[in-house]
Image (cartoon, rainbow, N blue to C red; front, side, top):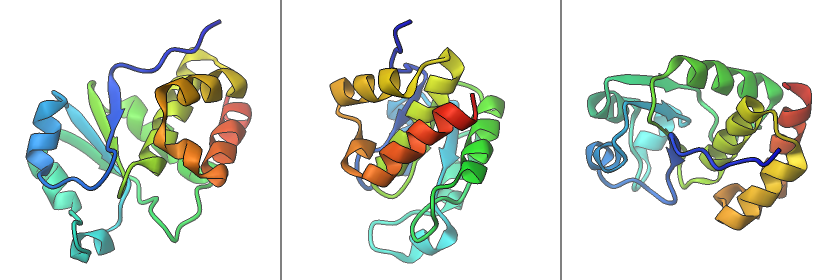
Length: 146
């Protein structure tokens, strides 16, 4: 089996200056937003209200630092993505956590192993690879949630 990068899920790679344009450029039908309200008050931040104004369907699973990425959060991410129409954007502050969510979800959907998912993530230069704890979280999720 070969794991394939999902084409109906995308994530941010940096701050999002214009949420409506970000969604439009990706033809997003929905948005999984991983930040809490405190991000809205930070420089370059945005709120869940911005997300809701940009797309018809959305979910907010608060997963930004200092929160730890846990299997309980992973289950919430999976449930949210199962319910949202495609194409879907998944965003965090700058992209690492959102990319981890996408690769974990796609790996679970495709029945892929952690090695297959991480190898494809390397080829794609996925943002989560810069954080060992996120790599471990993806691998753990692919084992525990499969």
